[in-house]
Amino acid sequence: MRIYLDNCALNRPFDHQGQLRIRLETEAKLAIQQAVLEGKVELVWSYVLDMENESNPFNDRRTTITPWKARAVEDVEATPEILDKARELQSFSLKAKDALHVSCAIRAGCRFFITTDDGIVRKNNTVTEIVIINPIDFIREQHHDN
Image: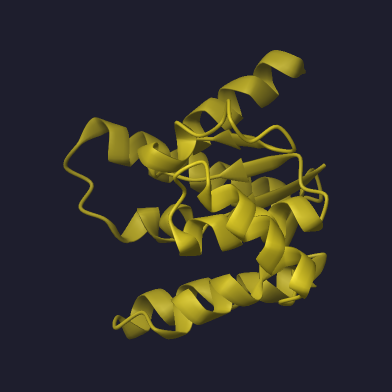
């Protein structure tokens, strides 16, 4: 099963852990990455993740996230089809960058797009090609399926 972790999810462990939700999302994201390391799920990367990570002003975050690119089974590059799909996704009120992320995940055949951004998660019912889900709910669903 292929998954795509967006930049918010990848950065969650760096957020202030004072709120229970953030701590739980951090733990879930770390469990997902462990599943990648164990070969239980396949991580997909994209040029959009590269752009966002490279523009991160925090060096520790960049250097922690960058090695995950090497763990990805596919690195999606920009194509006219991805840009067209992203424009279509923007009609569902997704922001341009978010639409590019989702479009890359769809293009790579991901079953799940994992994000901590509630605004993107709310689009789950409008985007039919992929499940948009929070890391906690992803873990819950995987344990329910097993």
